[in-house]
Length: 467
Image (cartoon, rainbow, N blue to C red; front, side, top):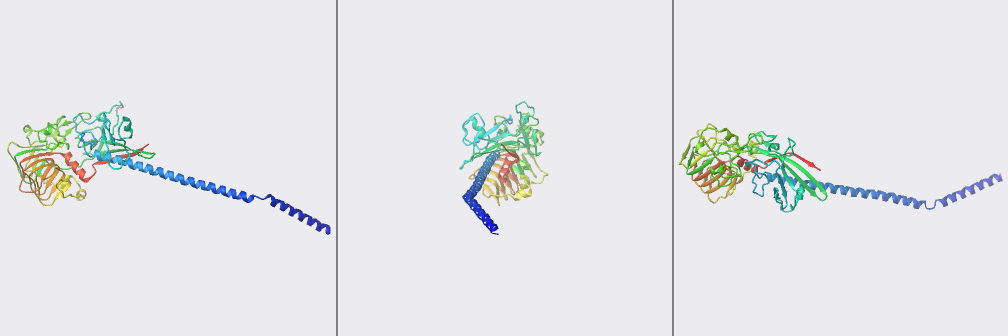
């Protein structure tokens, strides 16, 4: 019994001794655990910091790319706006070729737009930016800078693969048929504009964006019937020149017939027709007593020429200095109803009702409406737009106007006036044109003033980003 008890005590002492030894061996484990926890927290903190920094970099990159894209769009819309200004090569504002040149367009034409161009030998223009400079173009000092310029070209296709572009390898948009074709198949430049291609490059920090935009210049489909259209009798006396052979919108102010088809190096300011691919444009060069006729000329019709004078009553010319020329020269006792202003503008009811009319007539700019009578004296500045008078309209001073004059009452001119576009009078006892009067029809001019007043004038058909 004693031996059993003694043996148990010995075992207990051995077990206690072993436990004490184990406890001595576990000294420092808390430090190891603490270090492991600190290490784990450090790794987690580093991961979180990396994620935060990466997200910040990604967001910054996205912001720079978005800003570069907006800059690119700004350059694109500067080019679109300047294309809409028209075709006057001598103007710093306009960028396009004169599409009405006798030789036609240059297929490989290219315009570079710089902040401050100093280059020579290429077709380049100064950017219209003001204030904060947007980096979609650079200062032009060397030919190497063209790679960072805002660029406008024609859309072309080298159909024969010979590496040289011909006029038949330029894409055109026909405003009459509303179709895009390769090559100019007919009509006047006012009806068939080349398809433009804009290459805009935007920069913001390290971000770079390039956008290519293709657009067509649309033409307002005005429905003017004659250079001067009247419901009442038309009575002309004095020095009166009415020419309804379709004139270019760039016809110089003050130019009078018959100089409208002779006072230009490439033979005139009348529009031209081109019937076959590759042919040169041909001017409508019609004026003079030899063409005083009631007949309609098919070639003039293709060029967009209209009757010189049209009335639902009589037309009386007094004196050898009074001339009306057109296609035909005049139409008396017209069976056609007198068009309304909306008809002449070629607008839908919705678009016409959306017009915001100006009331300021000095100068006329855009859509201008006068309630009651209007008398234009020598104190009036030159006007451009659509002038709508609900009463009588009288011109008694010197006045130059581009666009359409439409009055619900009687139209009278006894001063010195020069009008590029058209005149219409829906009422009154007679439409009286005397003094020193020049009225030259221009479909392109009327279309432009409508476009400028309504906004638009160009339609984007394709837009894409490229690397």
